[in-house]
Amino acid sequence: MTDRKITQQNLYLILPGKVSRMAAMYAADFGLPIIEALRRIYDSVTYRELEDESTKLWHYGPVALYQSFLENH
Image 1 (cartoon, rainbow, N blue to C red):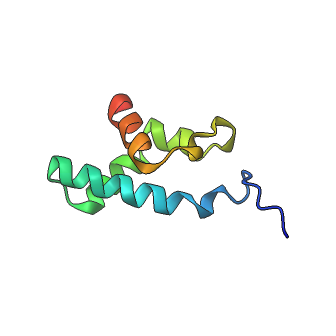
Image 2 (cartoon, rainbow, N blue to C red):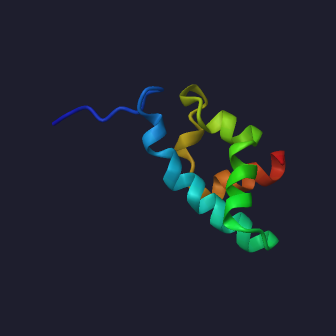
């Protein structure tokens, strides 16, 4: 069995799924087009922290990440 450790080099593989779910919630809650919701998330402090493996924010599910995004937005 291969060690499937998350590193800075492979973290990018799990981010799209988390971001897409966050964007869907954000778009629905605020009546935004999905593209605008994605732009705002990708430009956020939360996303910058999420893409840094050392923060371990990637452990959180989309709902917790969305809450963090709303608090920091």
